[in-house]
Image (cartoon, rainbow, N blue to C red):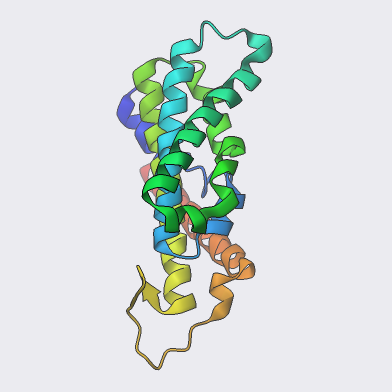
Length: 201
C-alpha cells in the first residue's frame, strides 16, 4: 500500500471526524476555540504515532487473546507522557482541555487504528497512518473551533476580527452550536467527496 494513499485516506477519504464519525466526544467538547482544538489535535497525533509505532513493533509478540488490553496499556503510556508534558510546559492549555486529555486513552480513533491498522502492518506504514488520521482529526477540529470562536466570541486566536458592533452568538460556544456546526460540516464535506468521486467516474 502506498504511503501517500495511507496519508490521504487519513486526512480525506477516511477522515475520523467527518467520515467515520468517531472521537465525537472530545471533538464537541474542546473545540470552543482554535488554540484548544489545535492543542488537542497535536496531543492525538502524538499518541497515535507513538502507539501505532509500538503496536506495530510488538504485533507478532502480543497474544491475540489479550491484544485489546495490551493496546490500551500502550496507548495509556503515551497519553500519560503527553499529559505530563503539557502540564509542565503548557499549563493553561492543560487546564482548558481538562478531563478530555486523559480520556484520549479510550478515544475510538486511537484504539481503532491500533486494531485495524497498526496490528496488521509494518512500522513505517503504521507511523504514516497515525500521522494521516491525526491530521484528519486535527484539521476537522481546528475548522470547527475556528467557526465556533469566530461567531461565538468574534475572535480568532483570541484577537478580535469582527467589528466591535458584532454581538457574539453564544450558541456557537455551547454544545448545541457544536452539534449543529459539526452536522453542517459533515454534510458539506461528504457532499464534496461525492461530487468529486462522481466527476472522476
